Amino acid sequence: MNKTPLAPQKVRLPRVVWFTGLSGAGKSTLANALEKVLAANGMHTCVLDGDKLRHGLNRDLGYSHAERVENIRRVGEVAKLMIDAGLIVLVALISPFREDRRKVRELFGPGEFIEVHVSTPLEVCERRDPKGLYRKARAGEMPDFTGISSPYELPEAPQLELDTAHLPVHECVARILTLLQARDREQPTAGKPPPTYNPGWFVAGRTDK
Image (cartoon, rainbow, N blue to C red; front, side):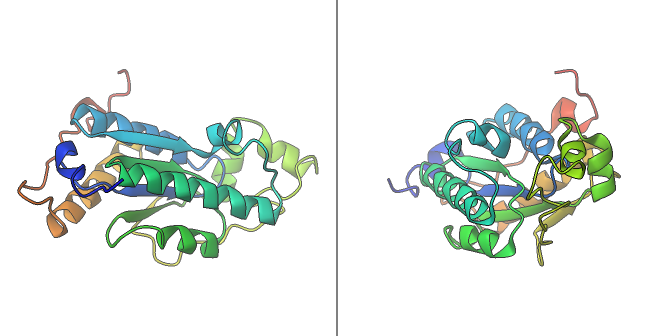
């Protein structure tokens, strides 16, 4: 499927926004919040959440190095199919290894891949620990756990870095939208002006909708 004729129908060029960071950093929260704003502005979007994919597409994979590599490869290929269909794809995945993120980036055309490093510190993520995973990792019940017994390799040149320990969700979303608008101005859809986003209730700080 050729994405070129599909993109104008969906107002703007398709892109993948790839959220990488430690467990509990806020990747899924930001992806879901951004999706709400984009959808409210008429954009066609899809969230690929690492935890949910582990229960479906990637349920046969564990957490060894080789299985993590395959996990990221599969998600990257799915994201590429969605980009080809003209969607804005929001990926929330720990994706701890630089080489794997580089390989995923190479699947996409110029300007299509936006890497967002959710740089919330380990101590904050561990304090949040919504699923009790860090506690289990510290107890030795979860080997190869990123940040504890398996490394997280920091992105060297992400397009955006967001620390949710200091930035509220609505501010993070606003910064991502600003980046998307800048990319749209650099690479406008043929025959259409770059879109503007109305963040509305969300960027105003409300979370009740």
